[in-house]
Amino acid sequence: MVVRATTRLLRRHRRRATDRAFGVRLLGAAAVAAVCAVPFALVLVLVEGHWRPLRAVDSGAADRLHRAALDHPAWTSALRFLSDWVWDPLTLRCAVALLTGWLLYRRAWRLAAWSAVTAVAGGLTGLLVKVVVERARPSLEDPVARAPGFSFPSGHAMTATTTFAVLLLVLLPLVPRRGRVVCWAVAVLSVLGVGFTRVALGVHWFSDVVGGWLLGLAVVAWTAWAFEAWRAESGLGRSEVTEGLEPELTGSAPER
Image (cartoon, rainbow, N blue to C red; front, side):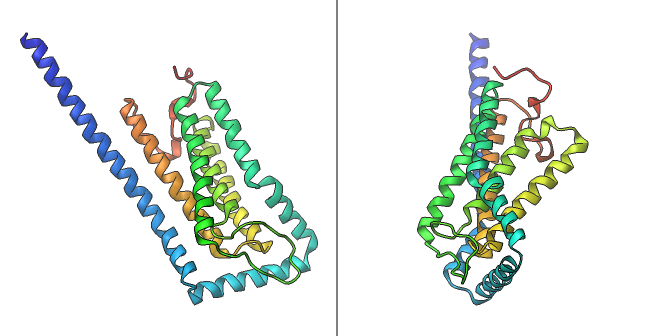
C-alpha cells in the first residue's frame, strides 16, 4: 500500500511538473511570436500612417528600378521568369507539399505536420493582412509587369521566407556540415532575390517586401517554438537551428 501511494504521488508530481513546463513553453512561444511580430507591426503602422520618410523610400526605389527595367528589357525578362516561375508562390508551395509527402513516407509525422502548418499558416496570415490593409500596388507609367490583389505585405516575399525556412530546418540534418553554409547562403539569397524582383518589376513597394519578410519570420518563429515544445513533451532533447528541427531524421529509422 505504501509503495502504491508513493508511486501515485510521484506520478502526480511529474504530471504537474510537465504541465507547468508545457505552460512555460507555450508562454515562451507566444513571447517569441510577439517579439518577432513587433517589427512587422511597426512597418504596418508606418504604412497605414503614410509616414513621409517611408513613402520617399518606396517611391524612390520604385522609380529608379522601374527606369532600369525599361532600359534593360533582357534583364527585366530574366526577373519576370524568376518571379513568375522559379520563385512563384505556387512553385514554392508545391516544394513544401512534396517535402511534406516525403516526410509522411518516412513516417516523420511531427516534421510533416510542422511543415504543412507553417506553410498554410503563412499563406492564410498574409492573405488576411492584405485584405485588412487594402494597400494599392504601385501605379507606374508603362509598367513592365502586373499583379492582381492588394500590395501589403508581399505574398511572394512572405512565401519565400516561410518556404526556405521550412526547407532549411527540415533538410539541414541530411546535409554534411561543410555544405550547410551553402544551403544557408542559397536560402538567404533566394529570399532577398524574391523581394528585389517584386520591387524591380514595379508590382510591390519596398515596404511591402519588408513586411512580407518580417511576417514570414514571425510565423516560422511561432511554429518552430511550438515544435520545440512538442519535442520536449515527447521526451526528446532540444534541437539547434544549425542542426535542423529534428536531427534524428538523418541516419535513423523512420518514426513509429
